Amino acid sequence: MTDSLHEDRIKAILQGMRRAERRRAERRADSSDLLSLIDGAAYGAPEDAQRALAWLAHDGTLAYLSNTDLHNVGETICVAWNGCGSDLATLSQWLREVRLADGRSALQTLRDGDSAALLAAALAAFPG
Image (cartoon, rainbow, N blue to C red; front, side, top):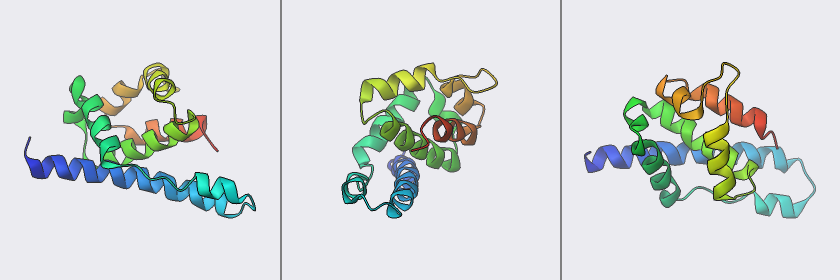
């Protein structure tokens, strides 16, 4: 993989993560709870995007994904990360065990090019 392609993929995942964090911050902006606003200020780091890419490359799923899919993956991971209490083991378990309404796993959904459906599942599972 070329360095440029790798950088573009990292950027796409980070953009998705930031999109999720912006949405979370907007929801909390109406809150008078200052601590919840401060708690929601963390953005994904390049290392987080690297881990996501490694997870997707491990079984070949990465080859199926477009930039739009990577944006959705970044957003999905961020939503699920926050919903899983920032616990890697819980996030990994959710990604392994989540089944969409049609019975597909997270990875199968991504391989089918339906990253938006996985994002919708994460938003439904972790609405906060």
